[in-house]
Length: 176
Image 1 (cartoon, rainbow, N blue to C red):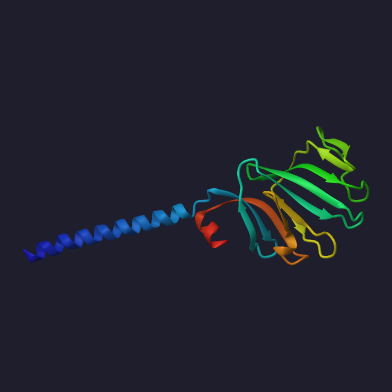
Image 2 (tube, rainbow, N blue to C red):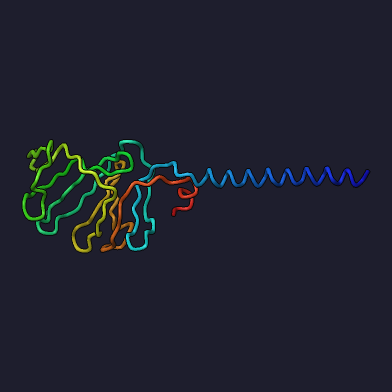
């Protein structure tokens, strides 16, 4: 009789352990599913995440920097579509060396409020790769109404990649 009771108890314990293990494995899988679209900045050399923020469909952001020759502000505006970064508009004060001089079909160059603006751009990039300025560029991310100097995120002169990634709950919590 005692042997029968122990056999039933062992089966219950085994079932409980299997259920717990299954629940744990399912939780790990679910928490690692990439579900949150995020705009991320990574150091190119190490692929180390230095900045991340969740985004929504059709979210926009911009980059501003000072041109090394003209020493005037350049602003580029981007939108996000299906994990691609789309350059949609550019504005600058001086037209000359190093500035965009060819318009793609559908793009329009206008002069407005003393600025040259290229409108209706639709140039797609899987990622933006750049070296943060060391002297005067002062690269700044314009995101969600906030100006974020890239020198506050990485050392000036660092190669970075700005891209869209789907991130999991674990990655959001852990920052990798």
